[in-house]
Length: 192
Image (cartoon, rainbow, N blue to C red):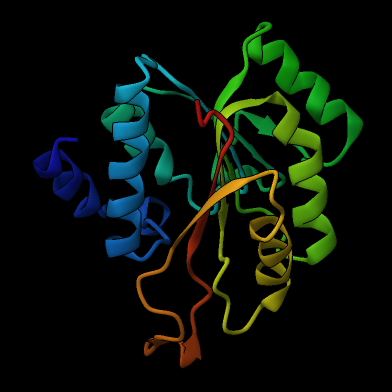
């Protein structure tokens, strides 16, 4: 992975919509793992599907660091999604299948609604369409334990190889006076 390019992308902040809502240490390591994984398996131009976009700032990392095709799903038009819809509505999965043109998702990043039921349903709907890696954001929540609860079920399920990426659980967000939800959980589907 080109670390200089990563640092350049990480410093890009023209307006609030370009802000990456990630812990930078965690995000950098995540991108290094994903990049190495795809390179080692000869995956060129991976298909990344992201559920929940916030400012859609992650898209440029996937595009410029991985040369990935990115498909974003979000209910907020301000995030400029490729699919403007609720990820759990039947029409959404059908629209995604049209965009995939019969291909599998290489990397699925789940960061939509953070309720237990929602994370679980996004996983159940989209995991079967994913060939390589499923990432779930906010697995080390200090405020929102719902994602963490589902992640703990997945990581102790012996069907899955999981990796927890946590920079520091419980670090306060001094600007907002709250604790951040953080952590990225990876499920590696292709462990051959």
